[in-house]
View (cartoon, rainbow, N blue to C red):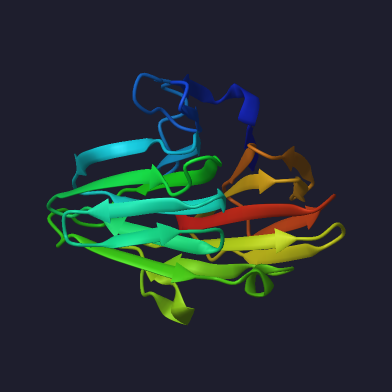
Length: 233
C-alpha cells in the first residue's frame, strides 16, 4: 500500500525570515491525520534568510537530524559543539535528558534551505550527544547511501531508534530498489525533481508512505534527490 503526502498540502509557517513547510503536525499546525509515521515525528522543510536563525532553545528526549539542501547552517549547543553544516552533511543531535542549541544561517546574505527531522528515541533519559558526518556527492549519486542507523554501520550517524535513513541523488533515468524486511515500512521524501515510487509519481516536497510492501522501487523522471526512511511497522 502506498499513500502520498502532497507537498502543497503540508502545513505552513512564514515569519518573513523563515519559510517553513510541515509534513506532520508541528507548532501551531495541527492535523490529526498527519501526526507522524511510526517513530518519525517531524519533517520540516525550512528556508532561513541570510543572517537569521533559531535562537538558543531547549529539547529533550528526541533525535534531531538536520540535512542541508542549499547554503550553510551554523550550529552551537550546550554540550560545547560548534559546527557548520553544508550540503552532503548529516547532523544528528540526540537531545536525551536535555540540550539547548541554536541554528543560524551561516551566510549574511544567501538563504539556507534544509530539512529538520525529528525521530522519537527508543528510550528516554539518554545522555545528550552530537554527531556530524559528510557524504560526498559521488557517494550519493545513483544509489541509496546509508547516512543514519541504530548501529551506526557503514560510517553512518548513530540514531537511537530502529530506523535506517538513506539518501540518493538520481539522474534522469536512474533507478534504485530497497528491500524491506518483514514487519518494516518506508517513507520516501522528495527534496528535488520528480520520481516514481512503486509506480506512483511524486515531486519535490511530496512524500510516499509505504506499508505492507516487500520493496521500494524508485525511478527518476529528471534530476532528483530523495530521503528514504526504513522503520519498524
